[in-house]
Image 1 (cartoon, rainbow, N blue to C red):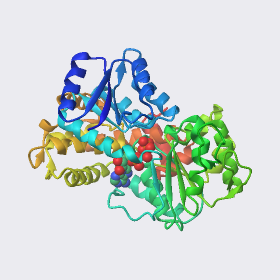
Image 2: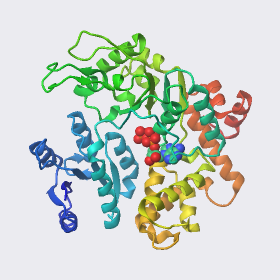
Image 3: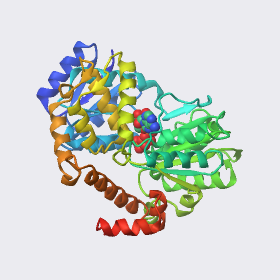
Image 4: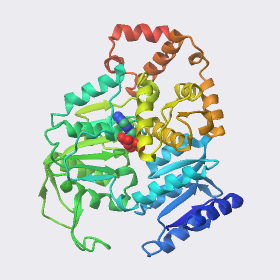
Length: 456
Ligand SMILES: Nc1ncnc2c1ncn2[C@@H]1O[C@H](COP(=O)(O)OP(=O)(O)OP(=O)(O)O)[C@@H](O)[C@H]1O
């Protein structure tokens, strides 16, 4: 039995849902606004009947639940949160994962799916303080595949190239593209593989506690510092520290981070004694750090210190033939986890998957497949196992780039090529030499293609 907070302004739906969850042994408190949710959460904070999971409708009368989640994370609250949203808001839901949501679920809510996601959130409850902390050597994970596309091969060529060095690395890519997986690969292939890999999600660190989380503190350094605490930098000594969403770190912490990198020492808060650390830093971001540093939100000196090597992780829609490989991988994984026996996806489902642009990348694909496998009664997962709303939305989205539909393979390839060139150009801020390098073509070819596709 778990104590859940349901924040939902549709009273009929919230009644149905709390009855359903009640029947499954959970105790549900319901409120309908962000303000109400904040009061409820604060009144329970730290109590024995504190909420185990927050279930948040995305759109609420006094704002959206991402803002609520952000402010909770700022205050240091790390209760797993599920965002409930219509499929049309899926992009937002995917972004929610960056604001510290555990998962999202699309409306109309499927009961079996809800119980599955809830169970995962409840299991997660005890392990949320940093995203992953491991003192054990990272082993080759069976959960990891590289893909066969040209762009993936290039990605892992870079990974293998930089891994054995001690260079700091920036991993850039959209949400859910597998940046943490790439960071783990670098660690695993490095001289530090037997040391710890410590991952911190800077997006869910509160501003006040970020410095103490990273550098540690002495007892009494501030209210609430009841004992000495070792920071994650020290925890990663001899290994790799992975800072996800590094753009979210406050300016003060950035200064301390730069010092730690330059001098290889950290000074816990409230202490005067520097501690020597030997840590390789890998940072991930889904925004261009150079752009945010030109806005003054990220220190340029820190950016250059981190940017000894940069790796761009491609969006799933740009990974071409890899999509099929990942689909198979996630189906196998879901079969194993859910004890199911789905052997294939029907042609209709595959068609939709191929046309969809996957804004949430591998994470979204993994989630969609897990739900599909869960709801499939047969060996072939067909459209019946996809919510109607999802089919319609996917079809609409898929229909949008008129050029990319149909069976004209050449046209299809050209459309993808044009999109990829545009994206890479944007990523490198129209630096054509860099773009050509990333695209693995020479500059002349790039100029030719820019002209051919009328890219501005
Ligand atoms: N190469 C891979 N092989 C198999 N699964 C993968 C791979 N890369 C990513 N995944 C899966 O995709 C999901 C997202 O991966 P990951 O957390 O590494 O992405 P991310 O880019 O770090 O996300 P975020 O931007 O939210 O931090 C995870 O469920 C992960 O297991």
